[in-house]
Length: 398
Image (cartoon, rainbow, N blue to C red; front, side):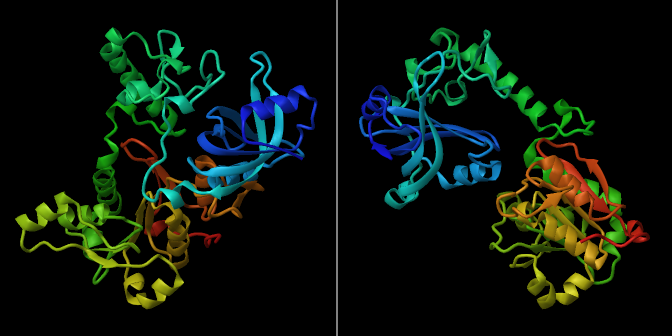
């Protein structure tokens, strides 16, 4: 097995006809891009200050998609890596390409520079691409793929060496306006979910999602019903700063309890509202994760809960659904992140639950009466819910 730290040494391996099927390369991870669950591209900065393009891909007898994703999470920008793979030349451009199948971190960037984000200067970037990426998630200007770093905040470190379109300096302001408008349209298109009939142009900004969700909860479950459940409370699970529970309590007088392991840090708007109304208080918080221990410790709260809600609760999403179904409580949850790395054993119809659409189907399969609709705000906006009447037929599958 050959080893190299410079591009010259790698070139020599190919020229001399050495074994390039199992090569070890030592370098610093300078760039990585996950194009799909089975494909990663990136650059390794070598000792001679050159960049080696690398690729990680899934293939039969090579790597599975799960192994590719695991490698993606194992590699962090700035880390010094010991990588193994196959060395080859790309068709057409004849540039070196390292097809990586294994790597380990020799020295992590975080251990040497704690709290400092890794960044590269112009000399560390190199690319052999002639006309940029052919991906569909890029904005095009004047028929070319535009550089997002340049038009976002003029921070492209590649400068004249960048493979993407920068345009003439005199046209920057006009091009940037066009880029921003096209990027917004593209983001709306990419984030659209099948079945969502809301006009993207009329959707509220993400920061308004707690307000939108709150209004939907009140309209769907009924303010009087939520208020008149003697001693009951709405459980806002994994609610972060408590935006949703504060909206329900401050604006609709609906008792709420925030279930969140982190200490709540109220927003400025919350503090202003508290200062303006001496009688207003923050909703109660149970500072814990939603699990069996928490449910036993606070059994009376869970027994009297009127509704369980979650706005983008990440890893708590399935826990919310399972708990609500087990206790036959009404619930409403807006899924977002799939968190497939944390839950690798999830399966739906014999396939790994790794995408948003499959995750939603997986959750909905837990009860035949589970309902779904869409809320008018940007980003993941599909809500899964059950009213009290939806529990009147077959038991849940959990």
